[in-house]
Image 1 (cartoon, one colour):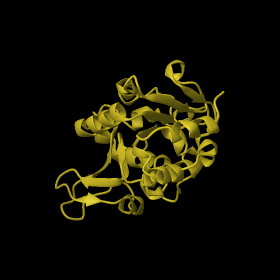
Image 2 (spheres, rainbow, N blue to C red; image 1 turned 90 degrees about the vertical axis):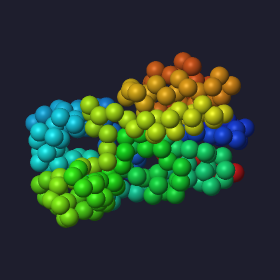
Image 3 (tube, one colour; image 1 turned 90 degrees about the horizontal axis):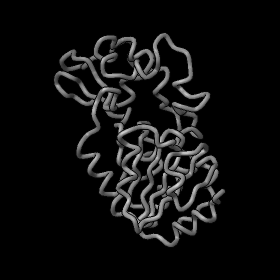
Length: 242
């Protein structure tokens, strides 16, 4: 098994590091993941979680969507953990050029990261479907039932990518370009099972290194230069930013 010291060496030898992360990055901050034994998809609800997080469900059963969304997807009191903080530190040191995240919690920005590519959007951005007026997370948490626009009464939708919705083309291009141009890609806290996001690592140029930090195996382990089977926060606590 690889070690944090080996990852530290790879970072030290690199000048253009990109981090690609998933739900496991935020688990130490108290936000549950999706596919582990205690994850959201293995809990019992009236409907499967994947169904309630779909575009169809949002449009047809908006109030039930928001009941689930508020109780299971929003963690306004969550704080950045060691991984978020170290990545921001690596960016300030000039090593890390981009964070590509599948998470919607905004914790990378809360930790101080500036170049964050949010593949699946953010709970912190919401908009009226009729007039486009923007709303922050606090507006959603303060309302009950279906949140409606103060200006026109339209339904407010979170700026998150639901099942049956496509990723933003510009966001995809930004992520792929960052991966293609890096000399070290660190994949952390993701099983690489969510597509199309998981396919983005195929754009890694052949001269670049690939390091994976995850508690469970991923489909890319066999092609990685380093695989660390451990919690991402414990690994990043040991990383030096300079």
